[in-house]
Image (cartoon, rainbow, N blue to C red; front, top):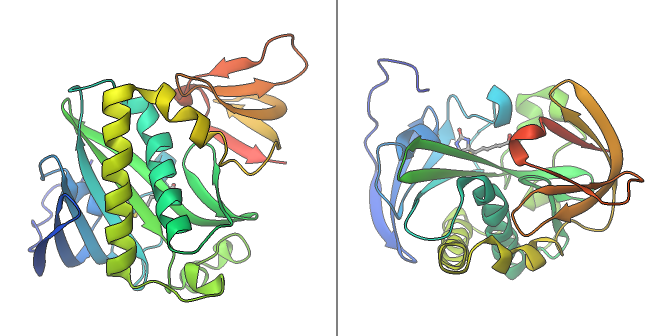
Length: 254
Ligand code: BTN
């Protein structure tokens, strides 16, 4: 949860962007915490985050030049399940990036966006109330994550490293929000089965993986996700194992 006593930040701009009300801030602790105070179809973007958060309580380097964006979506009105939101959001971000001229982006389960073996973007879904979810999206653009944290050198990439024109943050954010609105609409109306074939085309081929099932290890071939969003692991058994996202603490490609 957000540290007690933090002041509520004031946006420097509020605008309507592709079906969303976007509030923009210079500096916040985490845009996910700011978005926790917003309503459905509202979003928060900040130039920098002082306490950017990754999965499993890891910190997320959020220096100037990256896209730090959190979008609030309604829950429970349709067929969406919160466990499938990270996968749906990953699809939306890749759709937007490919539209902007980055065809080599791929998904790594459950919600990393990769180029080759380097991480370009990450997603963090929080649900601070029963009826709303916050989808946090971090994309390295022209920021310098490895200069902030030496341990990231060689493991991360940025849109600016990929060749071709680097989109302005406003264009990138607008494209991602448009795509997110479309994908969340499809998820709500048709359920996850309508998205899974497209998601399963985005893993970038079949890869060997090592799974940490909260202490227990399993190795096998990553077989994508099933119609419910469960991870399919092929490890020589007659039927692939279907694992719920909460069962898998960490997936490593090996
Ligand atoms: C991960 O890969 O572990 C998830 C990273 C998510 C980072 C984004 S940046 C915008 C939003 N605010 C946060 O504090 N985290 C997410």
